[in-house]
Length: 129
Image (cartoon, rainbow, N blue to C red; front, top):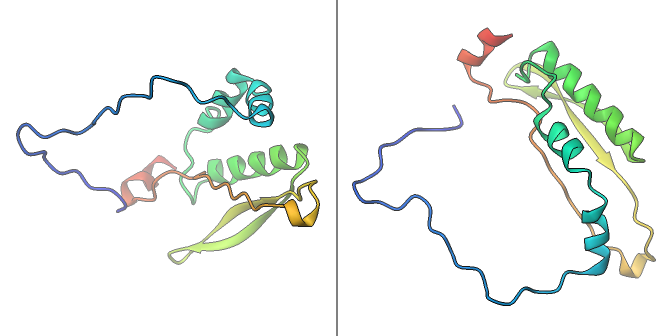
């Protein structure tokens, strides 16, 4: 199991709000241009992958979600592929994607983005398949 529930001590703080600085830092124009290009509705629909009933690693829905993500990444110009992996003793897949930058080699930086596509692998979840 990859999570646990524990009781909190009396009068404990779970969230501590940190006040924001009074002056806003000006955004980088290139970054702001990318942010402005995001379609908020499509972004939220993509994040939640709502058309898949479950994404348990061993379910057909997970395989379908992985294939959907693979296609989306390829449509965006990424060199994307499926990688066979094992989860315990069972076969599964990761989706990998990469895209070369357009800057000269001396200006290139590596950006790594990761995401969690499957749901929690717990024996109780296997009944959802």
